[in-house]
Image 1 (cartoon, rainbow, N blue to C red):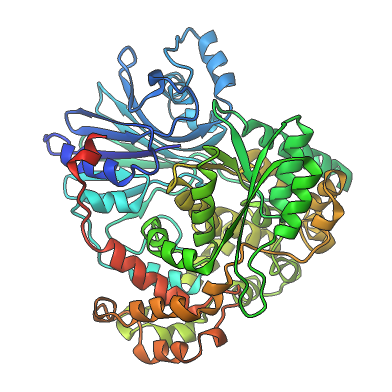
Image 2 (image 1 turned 90 degrees about the vertical axis):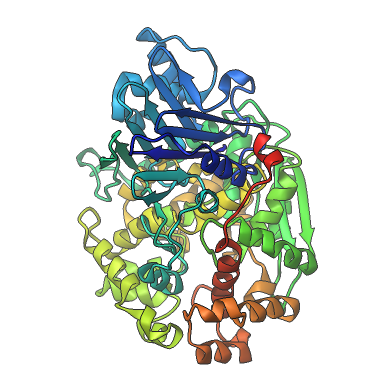
Amino acid sequence: MCGIAGDLSFQNSPSDSQALERMSWAMRRRGPDGGGMVIRDGVGLAHRRLKIIDLTEAGAQPMHDAQLGLTLAFNGCIYNHRELRAELESKGYRFFSTSDSEVILKGYHAWGLDVAKRLSGMFAFAIAERDSGKVVLGRDRLGIKPLYLSETPGRLRFASSLPALLAAGDVDRELDPVALHQYFSFHAVVPSPRTLFKGVRKLPPATLMEIERDGTRREHRYWSCPYDMREEEQGLDAEGWRERIAEALRGAVKRRMVADVPIGVLLSGGLDSSLIVALLAEAGVKDLNTFSIGFESVNGEAGDEFHYSDIVARHFGTQHHKIEIPASRALRALPEVIASMSEPMTSHDCVGFFLLSEEVSKHVKVVQSGQGADEAFAGYHWYPPMAGANDAFGTYRDAFFDRSHDEMAELLQPSWLGGDHAGDFVRDHFQTPGAASPLDKALRLDTHVMLVDDPVKRVDNMTMAWGLEARVPFLDHEVIELAARCPAELHLQQEGKGVLKHLARQVLPHAVIDRPKGYFPVPALKYLQGDFLDMVRDAVRSRSFRDRGIVQETYVDHLLKDPEAHITKLRGSKLWQIGVLALWLQTHDAPVKPARAEVAA
């Protein structure tokens, strides 16, 4: 839930209240139910609220505990907050709200930085200590909730979205050549801490940052996920592994029903979201709202998976909502979709999630979604080749990267090219201890890097654009840890996701399981025809984009001659990648100024 922002001054000057107001205004859609701001000397915190747990004003933020001398701004949800509350009450703590936010405050006072290890959920938070002036920033283990940072001499700002930082001002918008290379070759993934702008960085997942009054800072990584089996698990057979993972998944899905408002499910018709519906039904949830979206077909490629989502909805008796989107509506939505991106994202399903979230938010404020299952349980096509790969990096790159380094030299102007930055990042990650086999190296990279800065970021940005909170049970850290230790051969059974499919056969109609793998299709963006192509052509040939001197015009002209002939290995349009960057820069490269009425709200 929500959006947070902060302005920290280290030069004995007050926090910038106007910058905080602008950041808060820029995040108003993340938290449409209210806003607040607290400034104490050089520390300023702002919060936009989406009411999910404790709907009273006692749960409002920034939350201050005068007795403890602590102030909190928090985005996310702590699923085990009731259990932690009981433990803290046994220590003598007394609560003034029923919110999960207050549990973080009391937990920090009781356990210090170790509070992060005790939290089960998704979160980004800032805790300010009144007496010392120290501020602690934290981000959840899998990076489900974002936190962007911008630094200038004597000042540090942070926010839940990059556009919010831009609204504050004083951001270096020069492009980072390393990030640019990663964007164009590593399937639009720009790993933490980089972003495309040199002046904006991301707090990495599973990281705490301590910031002292004078600006001195320290970072701690409080969690990592080993891919080596524990000693007591050495004798566990296939059925034992399946039972443990099934139990963990059931718990993860059930935990994500914690809310004081109704919860629905984004039901694509694929295995993952269908399994969530099945496990909720198994747990006794009645009259569950489910939502599916579909687009017009292009070139004979279907734009929806309604056939499969209908099977699941009928089988479990859900209150099902099918949303059919004409191409004209998707086109009209694209400027808003681009504006909602904290970083440029090229996957076609951004517009799908955006339009789906618009409709879903009319019915519920919280949904569960199936992101993370493919990365954690080996559902992608490049995982079987990795199992026996002699060259782990080469095999992965051949399957995943959108462009070779040679093609990057054709795309980028020489001044931007530099080294093989994306390739170097993946090589280094593969050489890091903790994942021995090629397959485990790929699963670790995808779960802890690619997933964070592509699918999960997409879902957060597009759902929060409509004040909708998305929860992802497959990214429960206990589920992820079990999946990481599970023998690779079990994952690869049944053409991938063998463990999940075994569970699914017990609870789902087989027609949903034994089907070709689908994805969130928006064919009009894959093949770029008609008005979609005109929009991209105008963007990549615009004066503002050409003046940046990023891409070589001969390469762009080559793509424009036949966009449908230039599709990446992961079924994306190479021209669309350039178009998204051009459109994103046009949208986010100018200062944002709020209307005073919006700030007051």
